[in-house]
Length: 316
Image 1 (cartoon, helix red, strand yellow):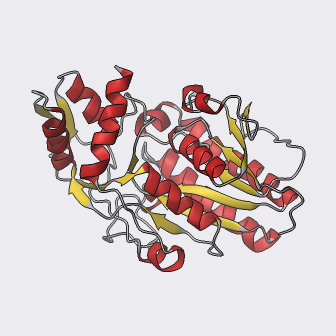
Image 2 (image 1 turned 60 degrees about the vertical axis):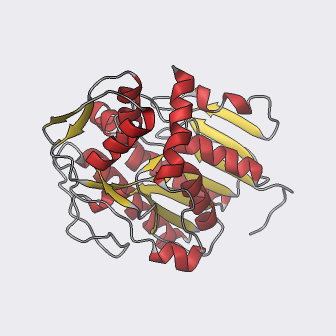
């Protein structure tokens, strides 16, 4: 790739979000100049305020479903813009579909114009409620396109198809990462996902809300591991999709019990009806990431949860 700038220039859409802000941090640490685009529907400037005044970082409030104009050279584009928690995409169904379709189209157009590497942040939700376990990249998924979760699942599946179309038809250098459950600092307390929800409830000594019987499984990856895997994919020759996540699987009830023990809370577990199309199992097969990226997670749940707990205590 022809480069006229001494430092690579990276654009991160959704860069004020949980994952996007951590990605901005890593890119800056790796010597990139970073342009963060975010319309702040679910992002938060508090996630990037520590970067204000950094001459190598620029924040632009922008909706990527609208035309994107950026002067100068761009070498990498990381497309992370999207509501990502069930609370968000159930409240913002049209915006979720638009950013997956129109937003991906606009950002791919920018990548084509700039001859930049394009990395799509996809999701394990493309596998739906899987009948294959653990989930490999070759699995096509079991998704209900007309269910309430379909707005997110199908937005990401369409975004993957659009990404591959630009790769095959226009020759854009594309990457697709399928992100599994991730946790870490900068998650919102009211995010709706298991780790922040359970920690917030435990710290407030409220009942821990577990949906269904709690036997559904999840695999939780600490944010620094995830971002390292994404960076490795961006710098590789692999097109993807590539699963990035921690294969350490546990039930949701086991997670709740771990958090109660960690916080020393007197909270009791209460059970609520399982949401429509909620996946019964979720575990990444990371064989491909190990092989082509030489990547595997380093932070297990027992080491990661205390780090998140300290963050949430600081918010109180």
